Amino acid sequence: RKKIAVMTSGGDSPGMNAVVRAVVRTAIHMGCDAFCIYEGYEGLVKGGDLIRQMGWSEVRGYLSEGGTLIGTARCMEFYERPGRVRAAKNMVLNGIDALIICGGDGSLTGADRFRSEWPSLLEELVSTGQLTASQVKPYKHLNIVGLVGSIDNDLSGTDATIGCYSALSRICEMVDYIEATAASHSRAFVIEVMGRHCGWLALLAGVATGADFVFIPERPVSECWHEEMCAVVKRHRAFGKRKTIVIVAEGANDKDGNKITPEQIKNLLADKSEGGLALDTRITTLGHVQRGGTAVAYDRMLGTLQGVEAVKAVLEATPETETCFIAINENKIVRKPLMKAVEETKSVAKAVEEKQFDKAMSLRDTEFSD
Ligand code: ADP
Image (cartoon, rainbow, N blue to C red):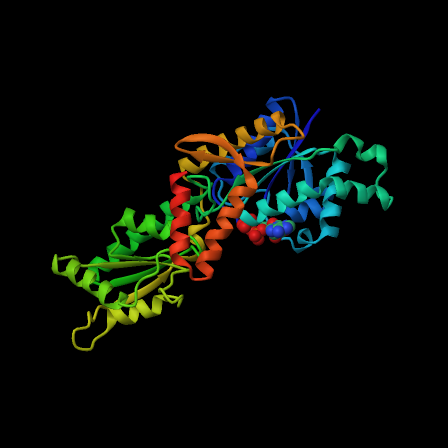
């Protein structure tokens, strides 16, 4: 009987619970034993009651809960080999031979590393006398499948990550609230949203709420952004608009790589000197409301369909199969090579960090045309 474990790792995102429920129930339906690893890699390293076998009814009600009910953590020990040796030991002691991990690019990189080191981890466990050769023999091959849980929609190779539409919906709802009060007082609001390397949330929220101006990391503004933004706001005000909404991603930059801060934007909108807009301006940082709360229908569906596919991928894998993650492309749930997506994602983030914005944009373009 195959023993399949599921865990959530890295930053939580709405829809992770749908993944856990789908994996547990599909595994049981396919005649396997299902396990949950609590607290991400921390649970794998520590073992004990952080690794639990799950029954069908234990994941009842998971769909309508936000966050991740089996917990997540950042685990420093898993970055080091001794931590991964302990993790491998706990897998063998629990008889687990397949692992489904839902997390961001960090978690998925860790997963790939774990799988590529697996034979040598087992060897070390035997040579140091922690386990016997016969104990490790049935676990020669470790199957790992990744699922992308992230509110930022920041992984290459998939159209949507689990959680991104929930965060986007939450942002739109919050902007609607703010708009009502902004219009009443004829005010301007600068709204900071999450996204250090990836401006998807800011951009899409801007489109969905009809914001006046949006700042994102991948498309830095030119040196004359002050004039450009003020001209746009002035034009909209001249049309009779009583509110001004500017959305800024956490990682927004100008072309020289200087951070664009909400305070800078506020000062500009509020400038009372001659020719200034002199708008009564407030800043709202949305923060963790974007991450929390229940998942929208799309994320529940995505988590469920991808969870089912992940179990199928585990059951169909052979020792030669490349480690895959489950993506959605043009509305189809598909399997794709894990490390290629992680590497592409990292090169976009690196290009943004190194201020090579044209490169970042062209990498994103390739990703979109894939
Ligand atoms: P996310 O998965 O959201 O990108 P992190 O980057 O914090 O979040 O990764 C979550 C956890 O995954 C880390 O705390 C660590 O335990 C593990 N991890 C991340 N990167 C690696 C790596 N290169 N090698 C081993 N483990 C890693």
